[in-house]
Structure formats: C-alpha cells, structure tokens
Length: 562
Image (tube, rainbow, N blue to C red; front, top):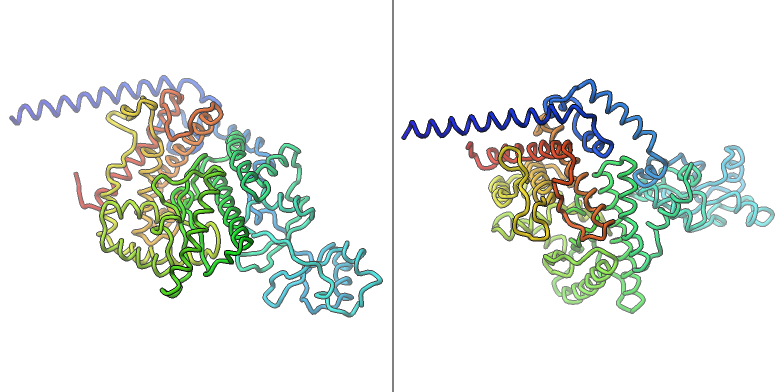
C-alpha cells in the first residue's frame, strides 16, 4: 500500500512539473511581443518590482515601457478628469477678507480697497459665515445710501452660498453656474469658513463638452432630473477610464453621485411631506447606505441597501414616530427605484423594520448578533458592517461604527464564525491556474462572476481583518492601507493584494460599461476568452494573491494547518 501511495504522489509531482514547464514556455513566447495599448492599465496596477518574477519578463524593457506609458497618461489627463475626480479642497483659495458682524461699513470698504479684493465674508463669533458683501453690493446698494458707521450686518447679503471642502469639484462648479455667482464660501464639517472657491480657477481650460457633462450630473431636483443624472454615469465612467483614471477612483465617484441622489431624494420627500401637512421629522435621524455604497465601491447599477438610524425616543411615542418614518422610507425607496437604483431583492431597505432602528436599538441589535449568531445573522452582519452616512447627522453613523468595532473586534469566536460562513467564497482559480467558469447558468456558460469570485473574497477578508484589528475604515483599499501600516500585511503581500483589487475592479467595470453600450444586461460576468493573454496572466496572479490570503486567514482564524 505504501508503494502505491508513493507512486501516486510521484505521478502527481511529475504532472505538476511538466505543467509548470509548459506554462513557463508559453509565457516566454508571449513576452516576445510588446504589450498592446488596451493592456496598459492592467499592467500598471501591479508593482513594477514584481513583474520579473510574475511574468518572467525583461525588467528594463518593462520599466522603459511604463515610463513612456506614464508620460502619455499624464499628457492625456485633462481638466475634465480633474473636475470629476478632484475635491473642492484641491482648488480652494484663501478667504480674501473675513470680518465680524459688528464691523463698521466704512472699515469694511476700506479693508476691501486696501486689500484689492472684491468680496468680504461676514462671520459670527464661531467663524461661521452669516453674510457676504461684494463690490457690486457697494456700488449698487450702499454707495450714497448707507451710513458709513453702521455695522456690516445691516447691509450684508444673505444667505451665504457655501460648499463643503470635501465636496467634489464638479458639484461646486454646477452650483456656481446655477446660482450665477463667481465665488462660493468653503466650509468644513462644523460649518466654519476655511476658504473661497473661485469659478475661474475651478473651470480653467474647460470646454463646452465638459460643461455639458457637469450639467448632466447636476440636473433639477426632481425624479426626472435625477433619472438623467443616473443615466449620465455610464458615459462619465467610460470617459474617465479612457483618461486613465483608476477603476477604484471611478467607483468612488460613482458612489458619491449615487449617495448625492440619496440626499436629494430624501430632501425632496421631506419637503413634500411637510407641504402635505405630515410635518417635519419627529426626531433627528441619519440615512445610511450599506454594501458597496458603504465602501465607496459602486459599479454601474447597484441596487438599494439602506437603513435609518433614529434618535432615541420614549416608548409611548413609538407608533406616532415610526409611522412617520415608514411613510418616508416608502417614498424614498420608491423614488430611488424610479431614478435607477433598484429595490433590494433581499429587502435590505429602511422599509424593513430590521433596518430602521433608534441608536439604542441598533447598539442592542449588534450586541444580540454578537452573542446569538447563526448563518442568517452572520450574513446580515456581512451586509451591515460596511455602512456610511448618506444623509443627516453623520455623527450618529460614526458612533454606531465605533460601537460595532468595540463589541465585535474583541470577540474572536464571533470573527471565527464569520470566517466559517464566508469560507466557501473562493476565487475563480482552479487547478494549475485554470479559471473556474459558470457551468449551470445557461446565460453565462464559460464566464466568471468576478464579483463573487474576485472582489468578494478580498472584500470579506479585509473586513474581517479590520474588525479584528479595530480598524473603522470601510473602503477596501483604505482597510488595506491601515492593515499594512499596522504590520498585519507585509510589504509584498500588500503590494500584491492592492494590485489584485485594482485589476479585478478594472476588468469588471470595463465589462459592465461594454455590456451597457451593447444593450446587454449589466452583470458581474466576464468571459476570460475575451481578455488578452497578458490580461489573463495578470488576472491569474491577482486571484492567486487573494487565494493565498484566504489560506493564511484559514490558519489564523481556525487554527487549521492543512
């Protein structure tokens, strides 16, 4: 029996060696040709120092190729890319002049003249903007009419049009165009003034085509206008990919646009309910989005995953208050579905009382899930633990995030059960580096679901490791960065996994755009035969890096060695 076993193992060893030699020969033959332009982006997501051992290629040739590629990409990046991928903070300038409300008009005009500025912002004692005075105000409304000694608060213009420093630049440009103003006062999260945005600087070298794209993403605040915004996302994603913007950055922008749609839909319905006599919200609340929206990793057509966090209230008020929020949830989810964010098939929406709770109820729910868990609860946690605020008081979401980290992070038994529930979520990589493709779904025979067998195993791994390490980030790359800084991921492992995530996201987003343009149903399936040989090789190494991480986690979370 021992001899038979030995012969069998020797046979397997020989087969593996022969296969390795064949693969090596294929790679060497493949690398005789230079990469094609369509493959540049995939090559660029892998760390350069890993190419020789990953592809057995000529290091110097590839280094020169990447330098040329970098120059070309840098030259191709236009203001269109900047306006959609940059934030207000990247363009904010200093406040020309800020004055207290009690300052005399004579002094304000004198300061404006001496400083040669055309605008002065009036602030309260907490440095929050409460009014503004422009040179047009001085010439049209004040000269020869106002008492020079009266306070500026008597003649200032209100309200002050503001923009948050972390808002996307395109939204600020559209806001200035709609308001017909040349400046926006920039504020921080606390509403304090931090600078001024000038429309000429923000729109430098922009074209008419650019302005059309901006207008397409900032339509009127009604359902029809929001539909147009949603439809414009595909063209924007396609243009940004052509400009060489990384897929995760495009996903972040798509998520921002979708969350902005959430905010505007909520505001529309709050106004409508007040106008209909239903009143204002009975308590303070926060709208949260979960899943890919919570991670900032939306693709083209995500469905709804949302919930409400409500301020605590007395038990005797439950019927009155919950009834009001049920009405709001029904309206919001219905309008989001009309806009192009489909209803969640799993009913993960604020219309479901499971996802509509007070702050205390949410904390109690997390503690119950932490103690009494089963397969259903663990899967609910997978959905819920990746959330962020989309509307309302973000501190409520931050407080809940901190509570989850404190409760779950110290419970290795819970984390082990989460790992076991996700254990079968492997990559699409089988024996000898062959892709595992769909065999049952007749519409996708021979294709890979790169969401379920590519990004999902890595997203789950980063979530689990982050919970264990007390990291409160939700974005996969942000979690990866934090784990690397804490030494949980070594330099090489971090490089490979970051490249793997970018590779899979790029292939998947590119395929979704292609399917949409061809009039096909947008899904997460990709046919490996439609990839170039180099792309398949890079994808293979990406999936292998994810698989190796999962194997390491199996040992750490279960204690299994083999």
